[in-house]
View 1 (tube, rainbow, N blue to C red):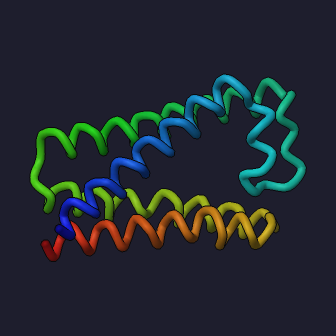
View 2: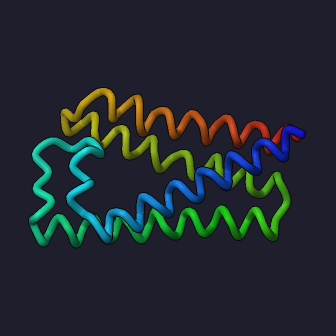
Length: 125
């Protein structure tokens, strides 16, 4: 039962991060809300950086689906634990950039926490 719940949550994280990546490529102006103040989304250099981040996001989502389809719950749990470092790092970047606390804790921090909970559910099941 816990494994099923954790798998569904992991799948939702996978879908969510893929959508964020696709959105960053198709509509880079939407990136203004991810936490770094003064982001000029019309800047071609920023768009190039954002495309790199978008590819990272989409690949991370695909990794989750590969592990859901072909691996054990424990392996997915370890992956989710390691991948939780990504939103933690993003939170630290936004914090260091004097970004909004709602982005630090409400977006990136909450994502990291959910990923940690999923990890625990998969590792103890």
